[in-house]
Amino acid sequence: MNVVLFGPPGAGKGTQAKELSSYYDIPHISTGDILRANVKQGTELGKKAEHYMNRGELVPDEVLIGIIKNRLAEPDCKKGYLLDGYPRTIPQAEALDGILEEIGMPLDVVLNIDVPDEELVGRLSGRYMCECGESYHVRFNPPQNEGVCDSCGGQLYQREDDREEVIRQRLESYKNKTQPLIDYYANKNLVVHINGEKDINSVFDDIRVVLDKYLN
Ligand code: ADP
Ligand code: ADP
Ligand code: ZN
Image (cartoon, rainbow, N blue to C red; front, side, top):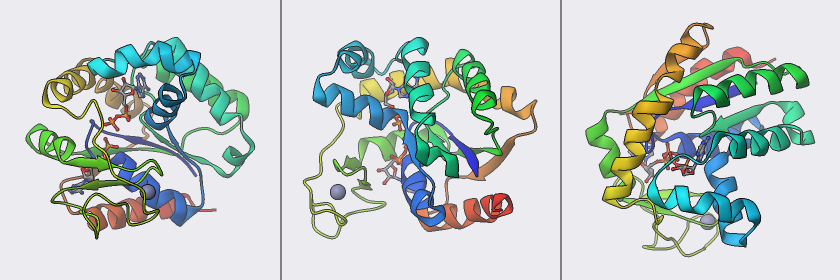
């Protein structure tokens, strides 16, 4: 199945994608994770992206389009893909249409995870991450031992951009540049809305009801 997980920062895209990826055995492609890995390794790409990421601004489209084109060309994507955090602008969505046509893997569905703004700030400011890609929340999804990842034992950390001022800027970029994509995909009849305010397991169950239709 070929899926875009859509929604504002903090909606729960990463949390759900991680579970869905192992449940359906298809790759989870997070452009945020790819960018952070590049920043950490100090690659040319990482150096270009870091400045934007630290401010909560979007990294330029041409950088993201290059990343996604390369990633979708990898053999594991023959099984399908779960895109998380891409596309975030109209030009990114248009480029994606072209790439998907070339590889013959058109989108099945765009899941729009709805969560109100008031809730998002609390989710992001309480988020703790692990290098392995797992994420936690101090109240909503705490690890068994404080500061330690349940799945790999790694040490948890807070993301540099999960600070209140940067969160505000990310929500602003989402409103101005990313939200218009809902209409873009609604015009193609691809959007299904998911109530992201429910607890993590209920959201997972609701998403499965939708995605089971695309199993072949
Ligand atoms: P979140 O999951 O909290 O929304 P991400 O991990 O997806 O955040 O993204 C972190 C940062 O990486 C963004 O604030 C942005 O700077 C950059 N980024 C990730 N994906 C994209 C994209 N598709 N276009 C532009 N910038 C992106
Ligand atoms: P995104 O990838 O959309 O930015 P995440 O999946 O990283 O969002 O989730 C943001 C924060 O909210 C994390 O701390 C996560 O543990 C928590 N979270 C995710 N889904 C829910 C939910 N349904 N209810 C409460 N907290 C949630
Ligand atoms: Zn871990």
